[in-house]
Length: 112
Length: 461
Image (cartoon, rainbow over all chains, first blue to last red; front, side):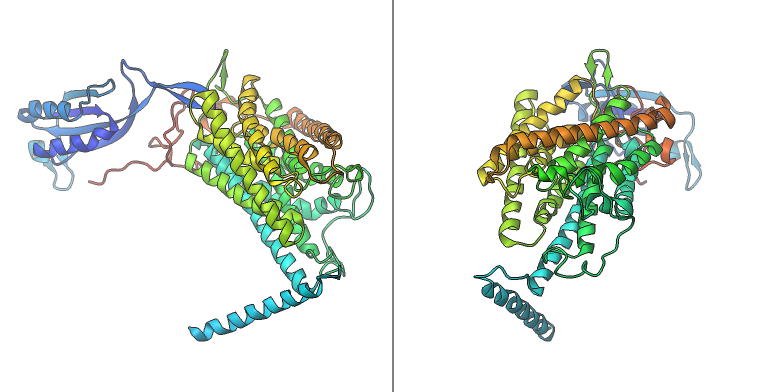
């Protein structure tokens, strides 16, 4: 089982959700996060003074999938979240040791 | 439902008759005010007391909108306290310090507590303008307004107990004694100094207090680092905007009620000059901030509305319509410059209280000397009044703050300031900050605060 984390631009969330839905992924967790990469932040203006906002709002999407689906999901995520401009985000994949469905106590693949 | 309407309409007709007939009869003589007019006057004044009260709602929302969420409970607490202690101390001593009903000098006191006496309830009390109680309440609201100006400038770093002590002393003694010099019949009144609704007596006095506080407190941590200034953005612009509009609404009573009757000509004219100045102030601030800082700044535009309002307050009943617009335009321009000026000399004012109330309060007072249609008003007298009030208010505020600083301490610990005064002073946050609500950044300088009230994001499964 793999956990796929994608940090994306917030306004891309709906597109990403739809793209995952088309692959049959019907569950995910999202978190509002802040961050920056190589692009750093941007400059804002308040009462006549400029300041650099380093941490930009992003959304982190987490989904769990079977090993066989991982490649498709990663590709779909990358395409859906892509704008071509800096700050598009990143996708990370980690291996999951165990998953449990709390309601039924199912384990492993049945829990995803 | 028709049956319910009829008595209402009949009553309205009767009231109209009562009001109309006497005014026709008065067409040729300066007769005593009728019961109908007395009632109308008093109703208007009571309504104005309520409108001025609304300004506290405005200050509360404006100040919490322009400061960080981790200090919101603290600033709301200060605003809540000030209006309460203001009314109470005004009842205990303030009213009788400000309006002792005797003397024309520097100090007089008519005793502790409020009591209407036999005359206070009737037409004779104030030429049929209002009763004693209306008088007290309307004036009490003004007193509290003066004190609450200070809370914005000292926000986010002043010790709560220290501020409570200062505010109590300032509203109980400084404001009324100084106010006596003009409105209570004191010496400045005799010199011909004019302040219709309090550009000097309320706004600049509050502004001097704010300046003293900001000076002795020092800036917020992280605001001025090295040679750079790091802006500390407000946490809630909708709240700030609502606050300014509430203040504008309150000014209908602040200036409209300072006519001290429901005189149709004076009240309606005053409301017009007031609103024109507010609008002109806004437009001027928009233009100035756009030109000077390359983007139109909402908080500056809001300050511009207030600047125009403060500026017109000294002469709303005595300057022409075009002059009102000019006064507003100048005030709106000045306030932008003042905000940036105070930042340049490193006096940290989170909400621009000093720029709005002190600078534009002075401008409004001097503007009477320039634009007033009353030939008895003179620029020199206005300037004299400004100087005297400045010396008195600033000195007393510095004195009180200095004593507090030396004894109780004025400022919270740096750790508490970083954590937020809500936690340090009150043990409770205004917002649930755990999930990244507005302004929860504890890095230095503060990271960007998203402009929303901090409701946590939850995704229901």
